[in-house]
Length: 261
Image (tube, rainbow, N blue to C red; front, side):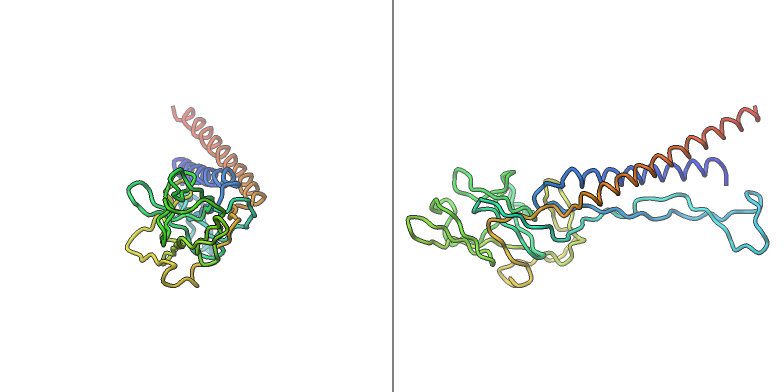
């Protein structure tokens, strides 16, 4: 093993820990974001290089020895564990208890999935997210004809509006469920898209698999602040140690270069 090998190990550790710091910081920053799902990172060792007698003294009885090339972030995945529910005062707030997702569509009718149910009606009476995406609803009455009034959303998504002493059923919130959550790709703003050719099931077909909708409630982020702060401190300490090791390797190289000049 030479100094270049040491520098390579330090570099990989610093790069990996920097990614972990970025992921953990993003989780902490979104601790109060409705429906946010935290990201997890896992590390893997890089290739191992066998040590030779020319590089290090090895006992005759020792097993084959090797040193890996460092570490790398093997995978960054979204943790879809259920977040806690909190009560609100808006009749258009919804939370899912279960594995389903709300569907929302952009101006091009592209479907995205989200767990954030802080919806509101716009000036035309269309139910939208706080970023303007239209909520996917199986309408029995066109949304621009819905009366003004307090909404009541049943556990299966059925929407009833109270107006002038009457109850009018106007539609049903559609929930979606991918075959495998690991195939969901985050596209920012708390939105996800399916990747590959996996099927996307709708609650209109098999509602029992999608969970329960709770009206007047929202799902909190599933970030545990205490755990995330601990992870941040550990990653920062490890980052500092790798920097110190890198500095020491550089100083050793400088000393060697002076004696070989």
